[in-house]
Length: 110
Image: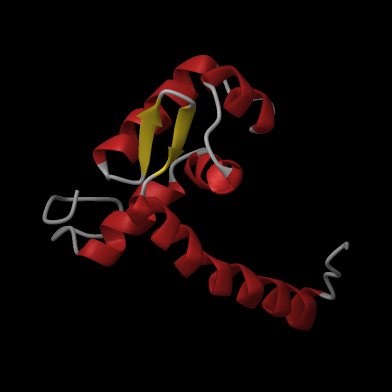
């Protein structure tokens, strides 16, 4: 939570709070997998490949508290804020591939 101590920040600056949230195991996987719309718990678990039900429950709870994910009649989906976050992360993803290619000769598979 912004304003509270988080990993990497005693003050809980908003940017550190976001990185703490997204740095938790499977948080980004949940956000990425919800990009195409609502999913049931079981389907989201399947799409995340190997995530335990207890970890998925905890990540959904964390992301719901942060107003990134919500539950609907169709399943879990990104909120408007969650979709905004996903769009903010896309340039970072693009940057990471260029960084990996330049420094580590990593080639993105298409």
